[in-house]
Length: 436
Figure 1 (cartoon, rainbow, N blue to C red):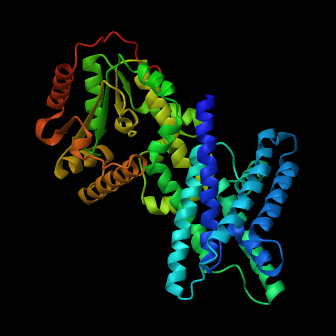
Figure 2: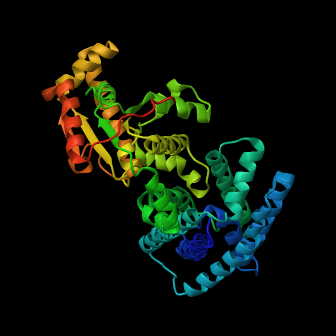
Figure 3: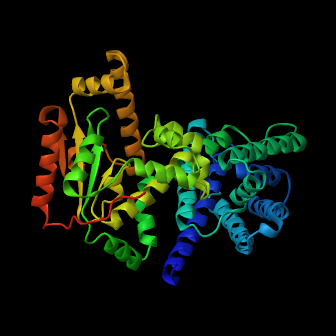
């Protein structure tokens, strides 16, 4: 990483740290509780002289010490950066609490609005820290240390950590004030919303991460594909897209990438190919997925689906850099959107055609085949939308959209071939075959 890129990343991180502290203070001033990580410091600050920022610093230092105890010789030296960052974060909290001293809402609806605004601000701050990817705050770093030491899922460990912080804060409130103080419905709402917002922004604001990457690196990446012709085939389930892609690759003398991507992915994460095939390109509900996997957004840890997408993205790029090829599915049209000679094809078919194909192939009755077609295509639509932000099957996202049920497989292959030959100069088809 160049010094210029590192400077940009740290700049974004410190801005994010301030936004993060402003969000914590905004949520706290809404008077409906505070975020789980701040619940213990806030409750203590209500009963003792030190401020919310100071108690946040004390808790942060304690969490760093606990990381050292847990990780021992595996504690990376750069994790010590959490200490100066904690001092700055605590000062930012006290500064922003002072700036927001005028906020003393009485009406519940105003408190609730302030709470939601605070969650959005905090979500933006968390996203900026994620995008910068230079230093973790002690709370998330402690959770990572626990998950590494005891080999537990980061997301589940984070849920237990946040719940424990909230429960301890509630107990402290009862001991000090004989009632629940510092923990309210806002604490739960913040726990649910903040990571969700950060994860959403990570998908949508890709230009921020593009800004952080040096242009020289981008130019080098584009150069890798300069002389290659890549055809991506997106297809409705039941349209026969896989067979068409295979025929097209054979006719053009191109490498063909489909099941080999599954094999490579399975090899990299040590899972059965059947499991990968069942999981990839499918998503039932993006909101619920975000809700249950939001905590991975706070660190470099990835959910299973995210891990699949990241690995397959790498494999797709490798495939495109090797030579002329046809790639089936895997959001390849989006992943390779900056490749000059990449042609994106979408294949669809009438419902009766798709149902008939699936009845024969999967040995289902008509009702079962119809349901299967609808389910798979719905999941592909959700998966594509989630990872690309675009609409799967929308004609403007592709160079060519063809109805297989009207044209037939061989005619579709010929039309794609003619389109590619017309769209660019002659290509070299003397290439090595896919050995993955």
